[in-house]
Amino acid sequence: MVTRRQSIRLAAGIAATVLATAALTACGDGDSGSGDQAEVTLSLVAYSTPQAAYEALIKAFQKTDAGKNVKFKTSFGASGDQSRAVAAGLKADIAAFSLEPDLTRLVTAGLVAEDWNSGPTKGFITDSVVVIATRKGNPKGLKTWDDLIKPGVEVITPNPFTSGGARWNILAAYGAKANKGADKATGLAYIDSLIGNVPVQDASARASLQTFTGGKGDAILSYENEAIFAQQHNQELDYTVPDSTILIENPIAVTKNSEHPAEAKAFLDFLYSAEGQKIFAQNGYRPTVSGVDTGVTFPTPSGLFTIQDLGGWPAVTKEFFDAKTGSIALIEAKHGVATVATSPSASPSK
Image (cartoon, rainbow, N blue to C red):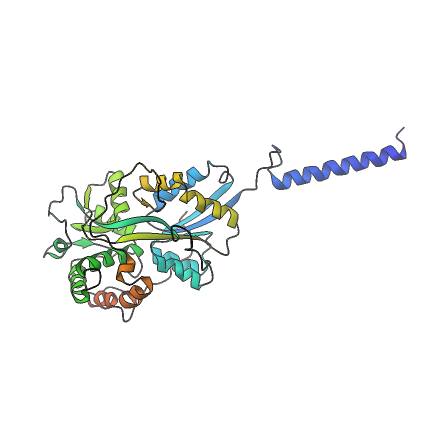
């Protein structure tokens, strides 16, 4: 016979067991009792060109302790379009764009912290340079900026009012011919001639690469990493790093409204790690973390310059890319190119 005291003890033991089981289920999967964290999904919204790199980085991150319970929803597209989509409501835990103004748009919208660029790399996850890519063997001998404005030469580059890559291309060409902005008239005259040789301006750098590899154009202005990507995927092209070209700096940040800020920060930390930077380098990107042995060597152009040499992004954006008064906008309009970007639908590509 069970006494009253024994009944009370038995009931208390059952209750304790139930509570312990509930706690175990809440913090793990309820089976192994290992205390694993619950699975979360991060939304990565990025510009188009590093898609292959991010796919490799995600797989590597998910093999780490910090990433083993993290899934990803990704969206890749033209940098400006992606930035506007996030500002308009597209969910993003991590935003990775081609150029700084696309990131600072989210700062203005209250979606990214103002100190996003306070770290040692100033918020830039990768670097690159603008190169001149040609058909295999370079049949027309196109190696310099002057070669691109010769009669009969077709140059492929995207629309700078949707694509961050296109703005880098335009500024590389302008800065090279304008002596880093010292001779604006010469630089703008060159851009006018260059745009005259551009038969089509796609929405993104990746779309322009597809146009070029599809057979259109004699040369394409491109990120160095895009040219490397094309060669890695057996595309028939060569490329030249001009003596004078611009340093491309690609920003990234965790959003303030991320539902999983700890996991998003862990992924960002992985991207800056030696392993992460090495994966970027293997995909053609120059590392931003000093002292990382990536096993890849990148040439340093003798006339390399930065956006700061041209006045910095706020001044450059207003002077060149204001849709109504910017000097590049006026040149594009003269050649019949649209200079007003439209927001894309907020649907992820993956």
